[in-house]
Amino acid sequence: MTACCFFSIYRYNSVSLGNSKLHKKHPLNLYLMNKQISKKYKSLDLFAGVGGIRMGFEKAGFETVFGNDFDAYCKITYDLNFKDVPLTVADISKVKSSDLPNFDILLGGFPCQPFSIAGYRRGFLDTGRGDLFFEIVRILRDKKPRAVFLENVKNLKSHDGGKTFKIISDALEDLGYHVKVKILNSVEYGNVPQNRERVYIVGFKSKKQYDAFEFPEPVKLSKTIADILEKNVDEKYYYTNSPLYPELNKTIKKNNVVYQWRRIYVRENKSGVCPTLTANMGMGGHNVPLIRDHKGIRKLTPRECARFQGFPDSYKLPKDFPDTKLYKQFGNSVTTTVIERVAKKISKALDVK
Image 1 (cartoon, rainbow, N blue to C red):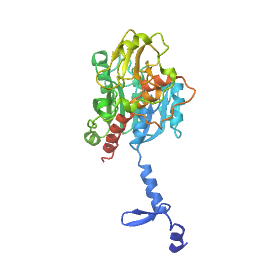
Image 2: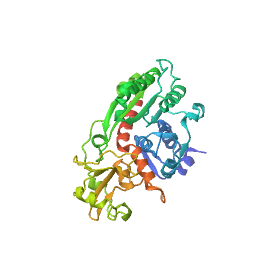
Image 3: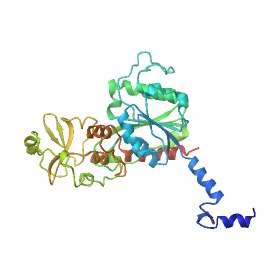
Image 4: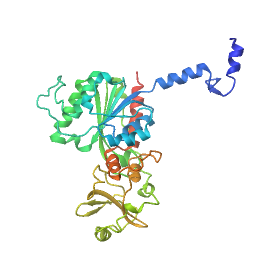
């Protein structure tokens, strides 16, 4: 085929590339586009829940190659929103490292639990097999990704007198990772009106990339509780006909303020933001976030909880699904906007050669 014929086939739909123009279907342009796509850093999404960490990293340009959680209910919500790589429901201890695809960074919002550290010593990473963190250690050891990102409750640093966190730090260092740690509050770093302090652990194999990485700076909060609340809420969320209503009505007086039902009393959050959402907020009687609107006193809806965690309204909630499960899922999740900001910093650091 002559050059003239070749370009006549692709003469439409041109785009600029440097000082020249190539249409979108030009082979060179397609090659460059594919090359850019192949440059995406690949991530492994462990203890994935409903994909909050995945969402933040994908918005920062990462590509998810595997997702795992033990909760089958999470799969319903997760798969509704992530079609390309669905959630694998399995006990992570039963998943062989050799069965996992290659990846650049391991992501994990792992549960905080007492570690069985009785025989643990530096350089010997096979102890504590029954603990979920050591499943992360196993996969990091076997797959050797370039980076690791972990998220957990703030108290992880002081858990068991600091012993738990020391074991985590020692294990990551034994695997060759240079680690940086910081506690970030969603209200300060995610532009969402929720007080949620979490510890973020970021590790790099490369010392240069470790040196290049910095956690994001705080951002001014522009969103208010009023921005989060839905306008037309189903009657089922209201306490109007509840035996609790007379007691709630004594305390819950202000609009656009989130209160918390603490089993035996109601607490007003006077900071102007929502208190930390918890996994048990939908179980009734404890940590239930309440508000007063033009119709009366009600609990937050699952969609509002998703918004307080930074999930966009395009994130789908399954229909005919128990609200108790959705409350648990979003209480267990992460603030996606904080994750995205940290992920962008990680991506920038990984670009350092």
